[in-house]
Length: 228
Image (cartoon, rainbow, N blue to C red):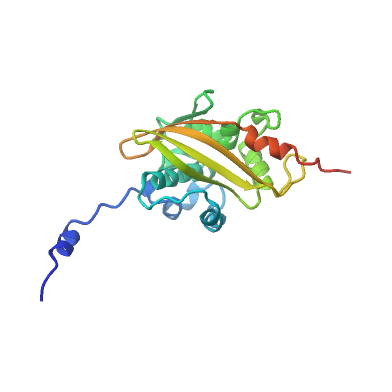
């Protein structure tokens, strides 16, 4: 009987397992304890169904684009569903900061307190973040996009430690938005993010650049709901 030396070497020197925050959103969800969640365990079945058929570009497994996309999805999930930044695996919480369009830097505690919608969307004639809480902001946009509001990396422009990439957000306006009736149209928005990451590929800093009118303009121009 012969033994394949290559197989033997692979068994003796297995590839090290990727850290949990690079194993994808579902792996991080499965590893979390019940007390970490703000409410119910997050459910991303709509993303699993819709993104594969509606995304604009496919990324090879293990490519930098795929790694960046998965890491940012883990970050978004943790900000939205874990109240304590100390439990966020995707960031170095004590060093993390983020901002939009050159605005004020916000740390992890601020993201957890007022929510990513209020920070990332900010103020606009059609949305005033100062008047919304974490809970109300999530209710507004989950109501407007009951079928999901999806996200993908389109292209990575530079690699770590400073990662810049182009992205796309999209979803169908099928629910009421602040008194405006849904139109059923697909709304898309595009932007660029510059991320600074640690040696183990955890997020230290995020800067987003995009026009929030791409999102809020179509939402606010639906016909106002008639109320008695």
